[in-house]
Image (cartoon, rainbow, N blue to C red):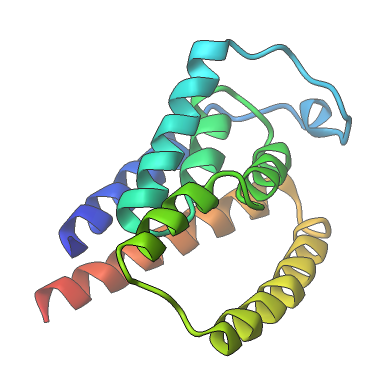
Length: 157
């Protein structure tokens, strides 16, 4: 299972690295954007859903890589979409399957993690707004690469 996760992270990192560079004016904040093909959006959602249910990681990385590299969305738009999509609708079905199988988590641990997630997500989003698009992409690629190295080391141990 760990090697599956390592391969998944390497594939997502490759997508992020191979992503076509964007012009700065394409990255201005706006609510609309070019229409995206429904089959492509379905594919991004399916990849995120499989990674959520199979690997238990929420699928946010798959959404960011899929929207950014596969569909050309700006980095911040891809990140916002991943955050909105992972809010509840994507993870609830998988959590229910695990709960039905008897894998319940203690409520105090869940509440503590939720409070930490809220605080961390807010702080991270505020920092992401202050760095350039290029720096943000490099940080995401570096983070995913570091995760894959750490998981590979864990798999070898």
